[in-house]
Amino acid sequence: MRTDAVRGHLDGLLLAVLESGPLHGYAIIVAVQQRSGGVLDLRTGTTYPALNRLERLGLLRSSWESAGERRRRCYELTDAGRRSLTAERTAWQEFTTAIGSVLNPAASPGPAT
Image (cartoon, rainbow, N blue to C red):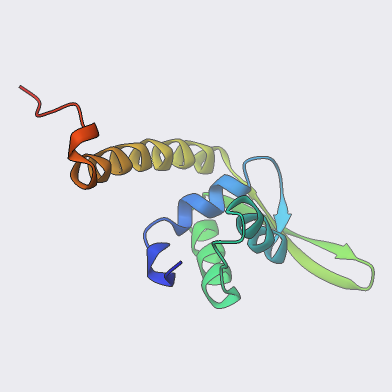
């Protein structure tokens, strides 16, 4: 899949994989890849800046945890992050409905009156 296809949806993807609980950065990348059946392969250079931005916005919080001799940062949703995820899902449904109506006009319900 084209890398630019994820643009505009990255925040929702990251928030969604954190919905079930905290994960460290690399585990987030793996979760997106697994959930997408291997189609989405996020780069660390894209993922970590996005996680930092979401944390600055108050949608995530992070903490350091030890894994053996290594330390890694774990991220989790805040209440604001959960609300934002709900809004992302609603926006995604509206977007896919609109695009589907254009790409498959025979399947669309017709113009609103």
